[in-house]
Image (cartoon, rainbow, N blue to C red; front, side, top):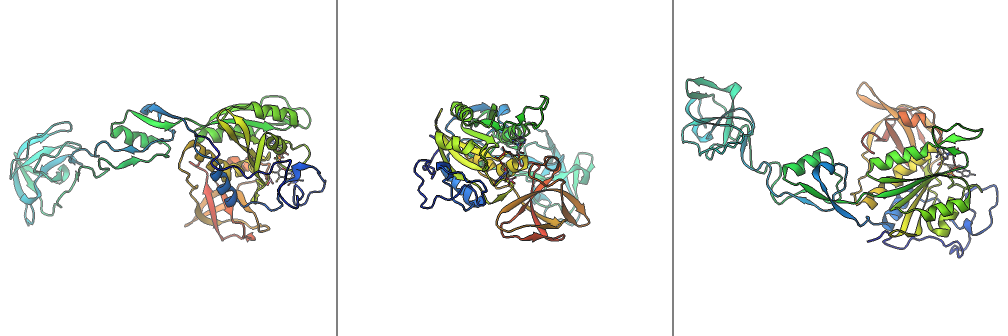
Length: 447
Ligand SMILES: Nc1nc2c(c(=O)[nH]1)N[C@H]1C(S)=C(S)[C@@H](COP(=O)(O)OP(=O)(O)OC[C@H]3O[C@@H](n4cnc5c(N)ncnc54)[C@H](O)[C@@H]3O)O[C@H]1N2
Ligand code: MOO
């Protein structure tokens, strides 16, 4: 059914439950009186935020049947159970000669076996005549009574008689019934995103259509008076929208259908009107979620539904907001407000957007694989936040070494575009030195 599995623990703007409704930011210079200040001072850890967010939402309801050739990238709604074994029959794995191993077992010299037949792939062979061998080809069914294949490169023939050298192991070059997968086993579990290889497996099992989740529709908007679409001339102070294309591409790679909601200026009324008009399974925005009086996203969402949490112990990506908007096309629509700086938006999407989309899509949530490499740089930091750094990976002797990818600010895109991975620096870490072990999340294949 629909999205909130438990009510979001938002703080209604009119009745802040916190005894001491503290300032909106830790070190806010400008006082901002009013109900919108109702957020706790402490930053939520990434892990806590992830847990809250995943608890708040459930997969979208729709399930549809798709033809196998349209199934790549879709999320399975039901287990694919093997209707047959693979391979379905015992078969030769090499071109050669099929025989009964008992006829050659223990021999110290070549054993002579007359040839009694020929089996090609697709044939339905007769049982093996005892004491003989048959010519056989890769993928052809083993005749009943044959259990071993002598590869043709190892065989000698004396007319129609096969010479089997000593030492042939029983079962050599044969594929047993079901050695890949047995009939009745779960071949592909519900929640798995179909890949080309998964499509091949389903095809081998004879599936023509698959039950998959309806694709997640995500309404995406960029905010900011300064933001213009790429391709338009820039007036002084304006910039091109990088986050819209970035997030569109990331969401599409996660199988989402993106509903572009354009660029909305820093105007609370317009923002509210836009947000309340959107019909999607998820609304994602970038920009306008930090602490300035031009940042209207949280207030707009709070008025239209609620903010469940705001601000993470994440660098960059701190001002992320998660909430919901009431009365979407299927009830409450979850809302993810990403920060405006492009690498902050990326980092927050990696930490929380990706698992949120996976959960809503019905996909089994897979933590990104992490690998440990050598740190190739020095980096000082204040402990407390999880930090992501853009790195390139180089092989140096026996070591894979991570180097900073370029400009490091959270607005910089060139380093993100060139990065092979993001280094994940744990909250407690106070510095990195060259040579330290470093955990990185490779970006290849992640989206
Ligand atoms: N006084 C404070 N100021 C800021 C804080 C804070 O805690 N206190 N947080 C900083 C952090 S951290 C970040 S990140 C940014 C995020 O702020 P917003 O989410 O409100 O984003 P904006 O202010 O709208 O924009 C920030 C930055 O990003 C550029 N931007 C915005 N949208 C796009 C886009 N679609 N494509 C490319 N670039 C975009 C925008 O021009 C700004 O330069 O706030 C800090 N400030
Ligand atoms: O953390 Mo902001 O998210 O510095 O760029």
